[in-house]
Image: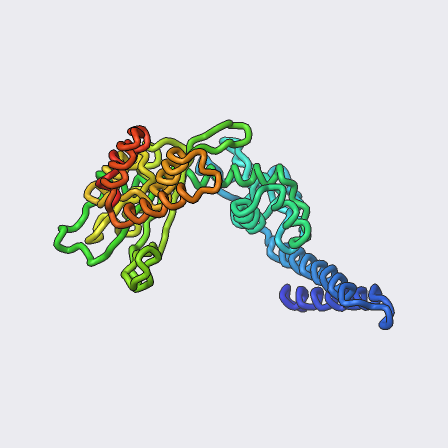
Length: 376
């Protein structure tokens, strides 16, 4: 009497043999066949074999369970409602699953033990399909995800279902992340003595804005990164001399939809995870928004505050346009901007403030006055 394994092996070999015969029968004549024909034929037959193999494995593994299972009340209950059938979409095709349904005699709650074992839920998608859907939805818009699944994965996944799946898993992820952040709250983290701080240079950078979300309207978002600061000997673009220039490496990020108050615990958790509080040298980089320096007081209170080069030069460019609005060919505007970019790079911010005040543009000078100490 052959074992279940031997029976399955014989069944799979027969299925593979039939699939190969069908593949060969469907191929065009040798004189007419193209590479595309071969790709399509092997793809279709390969998919069919994978699906049949998976179905056979599912049937073999649907072993009868014990006649009694534990209910929510703590008492055992016998099956009272027969079996439940479910059509399941997996990474390797669709399969039919048959499960025994149990009912607790005391509380009346029903259970499907195989669902718990295999990670099945109310949807028709397996856990692995759900993971792939959520992963891809984090990289592409839902409409494009639908096209990728249909053309590459050979599965039709409506954008609406992708959205619902992502929302459901996103809620679970948010709960998990919030629980993890609570474990590293400021009041729970005990830092070693400062004398033990490793000789590291790290920085934290923040930015924010607003985004229009379907069904919710405009929402505030915040993003932060923690990174190592590494210097490299390179040619300075401003002085054309070899110099040690700083670079951000080993970048780690976090982001939320919410206010600065909601963002602070998320950034603190990221900072603790990547050893920012214990780095020997620390810096905070931002565009100059007040909320950034307020968050910095909680996350990196003794870090050196720096306005990033992009936003500083952006304000300088706006000043150049305001001083020379009619300079259509832009020679004066460009020359002024080049001159004072060099001053900014060398830390001579007082020269920028002075020239703007001399031109009676206190409104333009205020940004540089407010952040002068943050533009070293």
